[in-house]
Length: 88
Image 1: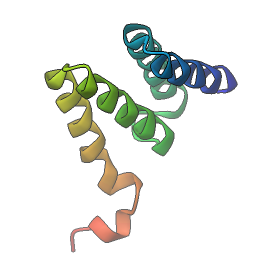
Image 2: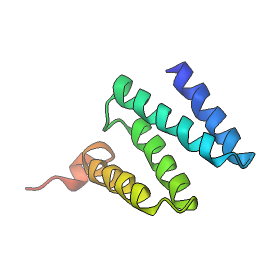
Image 3: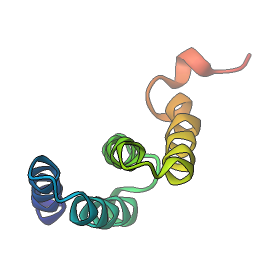
């Protein structure tokens, strides 16, 4: 996980430097790594996926951003506050 954290920090630095294509590619690697290590519904995975969605939106990659955002939103009820979203 330390490697993924470092890659995420590097992706954010690339974003700040305006190297958007590289930042997106690295964020995709981090999402894939976190999904493998932590699972697709882990809060850290979802946070990273949300960041990637935002980055893609800023680049005009709206379809991809929408898909990622929906994936995150669909997982939130079960991960953030399951008792709030429980159906009785």
